[in-house]
Picture (spheres, rainbow over the protein chains, first blue to last red):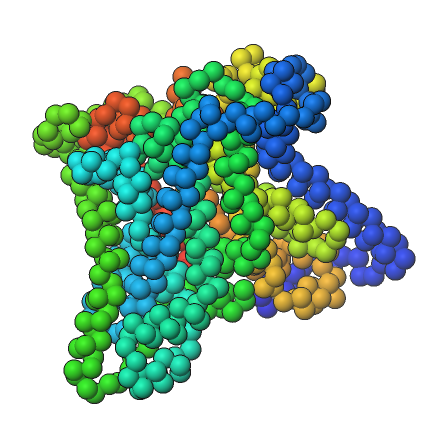
Length: 297
Length: 313
């Protein structure tokens, strides 16, 4: 493909066969500066909602409601960060979210990797069927399961509870697919040697494959954690009150129920987003690399 | 990063091994099913069964209080004459057809820009990607605030240049959709930019050198080298963006609740309203199957792409 395009571009047009060197240098330096300024401006613009959120969280209520609004706080206060714990059941929401996102991540990593080990390493009858099932589940929007799931969990008395939120998410078709691909790329020598030595499949999975897969597990773990920490629709459907939901749904419900108090909401939002942002900044590189190569979730 | 990119993406068959001992393969088969048991139980109970159940419910008048009664195709015929459905359908299509191309073009532009080396590149990359990892439901509160007609910063800035919607951005029927679209683009553009950046880095530098020697200018190099070599990424990104936009919900729920006058009510919003506010489980299931058809077709395209990629790269 590349070769054909190149010849085509060469034969069709021929522009500027040689330019004065010093002029080109100046142009290039000017372009670099222009690029730097433009991209920093774009970056700041993209961060505007987050910057606005951070600054507002520290503004006193009188500053927030005074027109015209200013980005920079005229006065700094911590009152919203104190108040948020009483006005919204914020500690409760926080614990709920940590338990929900944390346990989904850990359990799902275990079950996903077990299934992926079987699919990548253990030849068995019916493998193709399982693989097709998982690909099929990847292609269907999860929203379609919301109503029957709610109905089922309601019948079991699990709505408005953490187990109700967690159980349906204990495994994930994307996770299985992702890890199967990764396991298939691992060399076989070590485990063949272990197998000859009589190691059980569980020992090979837990003692050889899992330690080798640390980068993939880390990336997938972040996917799971971030996805569930941020999710709005599922906890919204599953909980009828602020107390039993997670941070995104709880804040949205709180926003809908009261006269909007932005100072409080922004302080709450900032605290709610902090763990994910910190996690991301810590392992940004591997996370972005993982996302770029899979591009699925 | 490159090692994973070059790996074939879809392998349906494991390498065949010849092991004559039948008992060993039998035992291993049993082990495989044991490894799969927790996953399969959960997937079947909480994904497969609910999907089948949703299909069944879409042929009933179930509403949580009354037992389900078979009504045949009634829900689907009601859909066809339901103004609320066509409104949500139209809004979803409009949202998808505006947000997808805008996001893809912006993502490519950002990637091209940030593929150059200059001071501040790392900051810009992180800043553009950051919206992708934060909760859309939470950050939409800040967006709603920015657009508040009295105390919102963006509203204020826009009023300085003379743009003042009569009832505020989110309650004006003409502008509410624009607002949630902008937030939709803002949220995902960084993710697609990263996919494009990975693609750009896989283009060998000597191709540009060759093109330059042949006298190709910046535009020609972009048009005839970069763009064709990124066609895989463009297809992937477009399909991913379309699938995501068809499922738009979070920022709309927080910023407008589907209003004003249902102007921003998408299909998922309608499923939520009919299902969990009107409690019409049967009818809402029928609506959700319209979504299934669209997403499934697009996913098939994506899957086809993943298989094709194996040949091209």
